[in-house]
Length: 186
Length: 199
Image 1 (tube, rainbow over the protein chains, first blue to last red):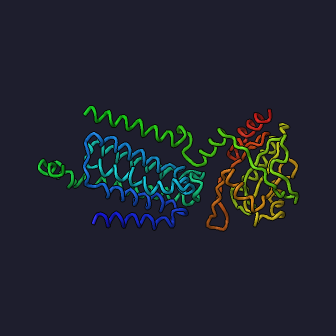
Image 2: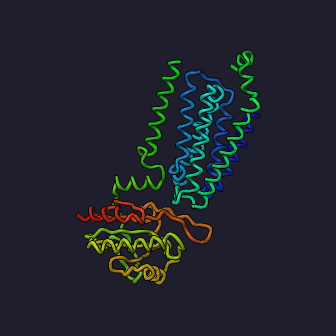
Image 3: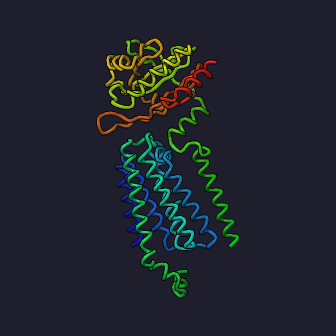
C-alpha cells in the first residue's frame, strides 16, 4: 500500500514537470512538496537512534533553505545535474530526515520550527509579491507575484492546520504521552 | 543528552557551511547575483561577433580595443523595460561624454529576426543614440545563442508576444574581458567602473 502511494506521488511529481519551466507555483508549491512527501512516506515508520534526531532536523532545514534559494530554482531549470538532483535529493534530504525525526522531537523544538516555517514563508510571500525586480531569471514577474500569493496561502493553511490541535487537543500527542502506547511505538 | 547537543551543534555548523558554500559566502542568493559575482571574479574573455548596426554597417563587437565597451541587451518592440533602459543608457552616455571619458556603447537586440535595421534605427532615434558614441545593433542569428549564453542573459517569452530578460549594463574592458554587470540606472557605479578600467 505504502509503495503504491509513494509511487503515485512520484509519478505525479514527474507529471508536474510539464509545467515546471513556466510556472514557479507548480514548481515550488506542488512538485517540491510531492517530492518531499515521497521521501517522508518512504522513511515513515523507520526508527533510528536519538542522537541522530537533531542532526536530521538540521539537515532537513538546511536542505529546504537550499532548495528554496532563487538561484537553485534557476539552476534546476538550466543545469542537468541540478534537475536530476531535485528528484533524488528533495526526497532524501528533506522528506526522509523529517519522517525520521519529526514525531520524536521535543514538542518545544517542533513548535519553534513550525513558528519559524510560518514566519519565513510569510517573509518569502512578502518578498515575492513586492520585489520590483525578477528574483528568478527563468520566471516572469507576474508568476513571481503569483508564487508570493501562493506562499501566503500556505502560511494561512499551515497556521490553521497547526493551530487547531492547540484548541481541540492532538490525538497523536495524547497517545504518545500514554506510557503503554509510547512503548508500543518504540 | 550532551552527546545529542554536540551532534546537533556539529550538524548546524555543517549545514551552515553548506549554505554559505551554496551562496558564495552569503553573497549571491539569486542567479543574477551569482552571475555578477562570477563576472567580477573571473573576467572571462568576451567573444567578438560581427554586429549589424542601425546605420547598416557590419562591425565587430570589440571594434575599438582602445575603448571600454558598454553593452546592454534589448529588443526594440519591448513596451516597458527596454524603453526605460534606452532612456537610462542615453543619460549614461551624456554623463560619460560630459566627463570626456572615451567609451563605446552598444544596445544589442536579442531579437534579430523582428528587429530590422529600420527598427534598430527607430529605437536609436527615439532615445537619442546618434551612432558616434552609442549605437544600436543586432547580431547574426547564428551567433545569438552563444552571445546570450556568454553574457548570461536569460530571455523568456511573456504572455503578450514579448520577452522578459535580465536587463543590465555589461562592461567589456580594454583587454576585451567581460568584467562588470550593473543595474541600468546605477550611473555612478558605472562611471566609476569605466574610469577605473580606463586607467
